[in-house]
Length: 343
Image (cartoon, rainbow, N blue to C red; front, side, top):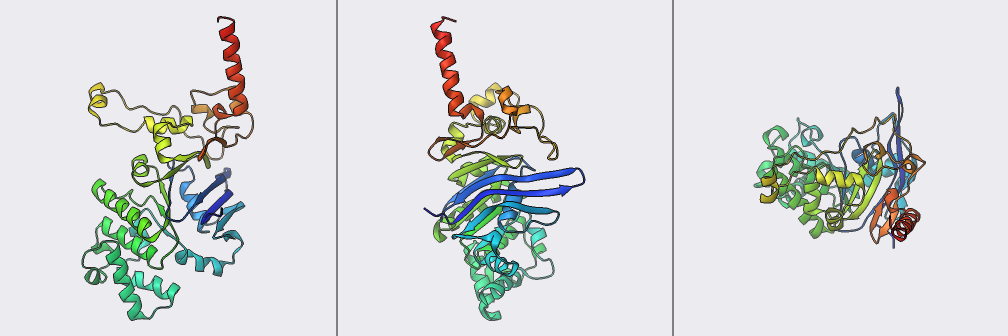
């Protein structure tokens, strides 16, 4: 079965003074119509670079060096710049973390949405203005005909983010990439924006790639989650499975470090758990498993060569030797021998 968007073995590298930075290394995932995939990880793990690679917006000295990005069966990496410009906005749209830097301060928000429609859809000024107002109404901006004449600085952060979503969806794309769309917003506005994205996904059968470092956001709206660490996907799983039974030690650590507010946990008043150590420098990544220096389950074998993604169960993949079938067989054999010897 072919997927709407399929990223295969994507590598994006940066040549810096300190050495080669493998920002995205062998990343693969897929998205189908109406599906929301959460891409999670801490700052600097390569989430945004993955999104920019899909949009082919990686700036120099960054370069996509290998892989395929298949959209509706065609490889985006083989398109000319003009063809790619046509795909951006029309077929795949992206909203960014800070709408203030994405919106032009000297044009009204209505003009900016209308410009996207004139560019991609060839609408007249009048038709584009009407369509822009309608797009603003769809993202629940009150009095859209009036607010269309506002400049970005006249709107609140939540309203600006809604304008960005309206602009992204104006040309009716099939895929929406949302890069940390709620980071700069307070919690109630955050919930409204997430609910809006979720509703639009259902009504438009929109495929959404939601990039975030906030596991609460993922639990709220995603169906599947991919967890990234130092440029690689270390675990992919349906959202319920990931929260109930995290497989990778890094995912386990991430979930443990989220504060809990249930009466039982508050009564214990324990210190918040953390993941030992620090993220390695991108120019000096450890051999084998990049998480090995911080992992409590580490073994000598973790440092020996590339660790693949193991299929643990349908829809669940983990990049960890604990799930290597050969290893599991040998450890269970050891256990049997020890039990037999009464040790």
